[in-house]
Image (cartoon, rainbow, N blue to C red):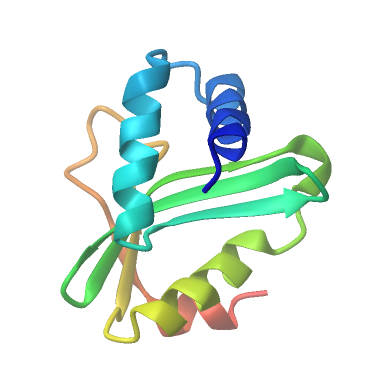
Length: 120
């Protein structure tokens, strides 16, 4: 990823996830996840439309972040990114979502990939 692309992605993340305030820390996370092929960016021309960051642990994957620009919502991006991730990591059978967990949750709930892919 080119430095100006990285800056655009960081700007996007800071807009949709202000809890990630430190630009350098965000760049560090992105760079690390790019090395492991667990960071995806969807572009609308030159502009960032969505980002997704995963962690893979054997046959389980956890979506850490998934942010979508308002005008790109409800376009089935999560399914498309999931399919791309499964192509790269075919061993993944379960997927968990970290975002939006409540304080009283007992952890991340994992769902079978087959269930997620057939939902419409």
